[in-house]
Image (cartoon, rainbow, N blue to C red; front, side, top):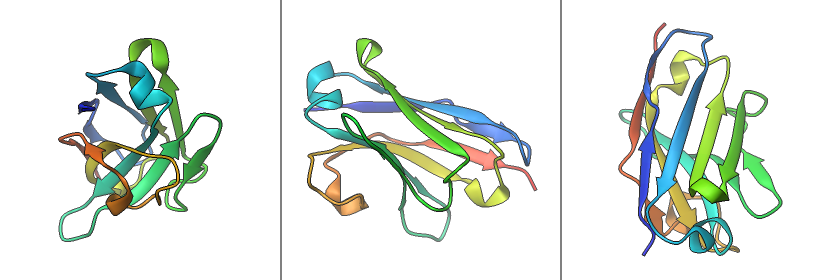
Length: 124
């Protein structure tokens, strides 16, 4: 079973930058080769939404963060990252890392493993 732990959240000012990390506690191959890794976020009163994902050779971003976010991974460290620049108040949410099998949709229902989340707050 894949276990994921997010870190790097916190308070940042409007227009600032932040990098989130997601560390896997199980097999590097199972996380970074057999699975697609993704980031989701959930703001108070809203549903969990897709942010970005990374497969073996492709990345995908939601329109909300396109041009501002970069997803990457380091298989040697079994860690995935989400770098987001020009943060906005609407980016405030709990951010979750997750893993899914290839072929599943980039929706919450498509992902099988989840971290506990890390809070990101962007001041107005």
